[in-house]
Image 1 (cartoon, helix red, strand yellow):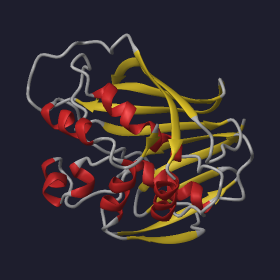
Image 2: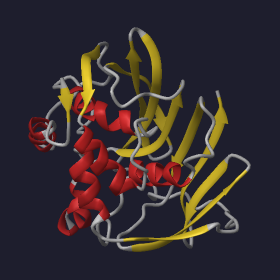
Image 3: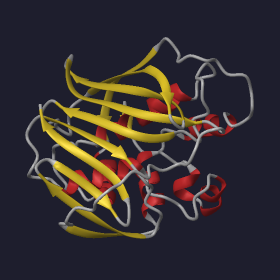
Image 4: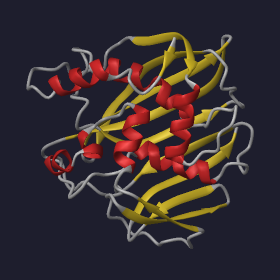
Length: 270
């Protein structure tokens, strides 16, 4: 089975219908999803690389399996027994472990499940875990942490003290990044693609996808990453589009920032 940018249309409709108020369960579904035989569409891979800044190679970018698994994740999070509407969830952290280079011609088998429903200062958070295997061996794994905000919660952003590092690069992020990444990722959340939709969720304009910003950082580090590693990021303040942001990297740590931090990450050899 080949997965590409058009595989989430039904999931998008279910996500919108999920905004209709209804009684929801209080716990995460005690089940998982699996999808076997996933092959890479080379044209889609090239389009993804262009949007995120990766070079065209026969090796999958470290964030690309996240995109391949996104239709499966959307199917899972739009289940009737899922406790939160998927539109409105905030992606606050992501950890990816790359066990080694993954050839673009490999056939991948994905498994997915949720865990660790727990309180957060601004609502409730949980983890979505995805694993990719080739010939039965895990080659890639990811844990995404999502926040469901409570109406009674406080402000949206972390306002702790922060000192800007020395920038190693300055990036101009055009307004089209939201729609371009939506096209290659299948994540068409209106906060990324529609100024009206963004305003409905409290943003002055569209914002960049968090996973685009992580991918852009790792694209900037191509050739400097170990063969096997874990890369953890926390998504801070959103990048409101268009934007000019700074990138800093040193000692395995990296950051995107403006007047305040947008993303903070760390690479650890596995």
